[in-house]
Image (cartoon, rainbow, N blue to C red):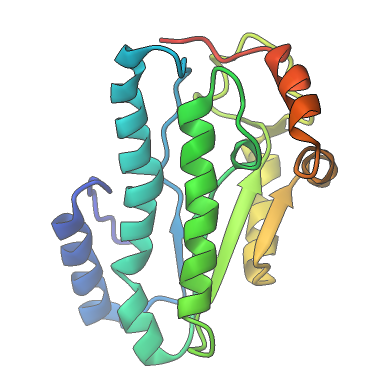
Length: 203
């Protein structure tokens, strides 16, 4: 294992790491963009726009740059998988979690565009949308988290979905069913439901 400590918001650092890696080892078989942050936000508070900018910088631009840094070498090699870790929170806007939901929705849509651009190149693009996973990001939540997985439970499921090159995978399957209900839900009904849901605390 060769570590490359970089800040995903620094494009030049990502490119330098990617160039060094490919020079030493060739194009990678797999790149997983997993860097992400989360914090409770209130969309009505102007002071929370700084949090929005930070989440978009890491969760969207940082993710996209992480994959873009390796994509050209993988296209030239005609193989490999680019994987983005998004979230089920990106399917609908959640009260108290607007910045995170928006960032994960953008991440999911970005990978759709990337997949279309790389179509026929031999490079697969995978988007993983986990539900609740027990990590420091979720331990601040003061509400019940349905279908909560430990990191050790979530990791092999995510690995299997990536290995299968699934375009979009929601993990666990119970959350996939929830997303199937929420995504087509009429706006008036979702607004009523979401307004009563527990919220991540604003830091």
